[in-house]
Image 1 (cartoon, helix red, strand yellow):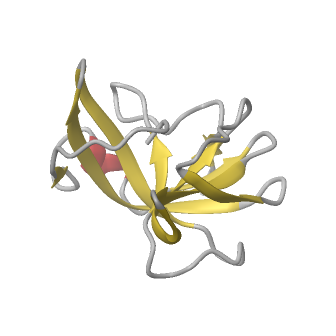
Image 2: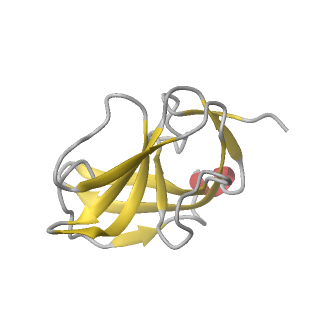
Length: 128
């Protein structure tokens, strides 16, 4: 993500604390969010993953397209993952975004903070 390829393997952390507490929960988009499609450059047609991002967005050779999402769109947290990065770990949720027109077979990532809270610049919890 972020315009570079990270070859470190992804590790599922869905069943670990604190992430397990967020699995199945929903949040509502709070700003102008885009679904950014990351490709397998130089093959720009092969999409590896999609990331939900608030401004500023990314445009480079690793981005094939972006899809604007509806204001107040609800997303559901499905699983949690981590990947070793240059400075520690990158952690994110895989989410479902019903009705957004995103491919079902490509993971949609939502960043989180160190405590497992979904990125507050992108979404807020939905009270049930």
